[in-house]
Image 1 (cartoon, rainbow, N blue to C red):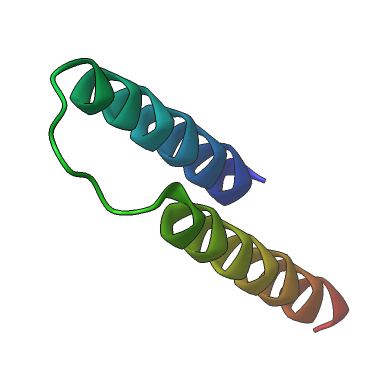
Image 2 (cartoon, one colour; image 1 turned 180 degrees about the horizontal axis):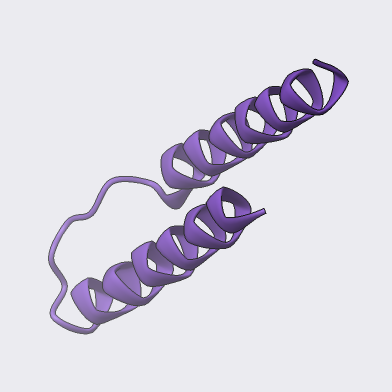
Length: 55
């Protein structure tokens, strides 16, 4: 559960960073990369938790 909160907080921070960069007209990586990484890591954390629960 903690990992999910960390991934969510990281995604929110990435969006805030992109917003700040947009104010200065700097180029940033598309936020979909961060969103995809967050989703993949969240699923991995859930799968790990499920496996450990069943052991």
